[in-house]
Amino acid sequence: EQRFLTLDQLHALADAAGDHRPLVYILGTCGLRFGEAAELRWRDVVLDKNMISVRRAVTLFDNKFVVGTPKGGRGRTVSLPGFVADMLTPGDPDALLFPDTAGGHMRGTNVRRRWWSDAVETAQLFPRIEKNAAGEKVTVYGFKIHELRHTAASLAIQAGANIKSLQNMLGHESAALSLDRYGHLY
Image 1 (tube, rainbow, N blue to C red):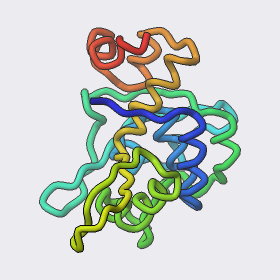
Image 2: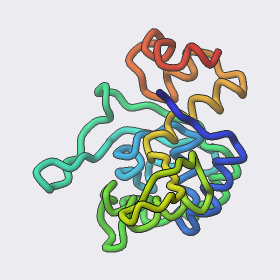
Image 3: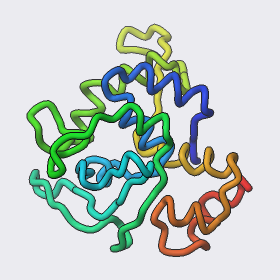
């Protein structure tokens, strides 16, 4: 089942993410996959035109980062909301937009462990009651980074995006695929 955030929930999550606020907004409003955002370079962002060129993605294979084309094999250009562009300060054109603490590509596992889980808990997203090791009931919060992609699709549809615009934003090979995934939101 797809889960997505309301705009208010997205703002709460972004605020809870602290310095990672722009990344949360790019994932939650532009629909990039995590590997696409992890490989974004400053040369891919045109702030004065509010655009991002998604031409590459990075994956972790055998504990090594491999840069290739985005899923589906084609690049795309997506709109960058002005308020998100205003959060960004350009850097070296070849530098990563969202480097990890050592300056290299982000690892999803490190992101989840270092700040994502705390931000989700602070924003109190999708609470559920579980029993801890002592058998006590505790509230656990859960929302996956990839679900920001669903959030972006949902918000775009609410804003009036047609299926072809949604297809382009998400980088789907066909409008039929976009309709299969998100048609129920129309």
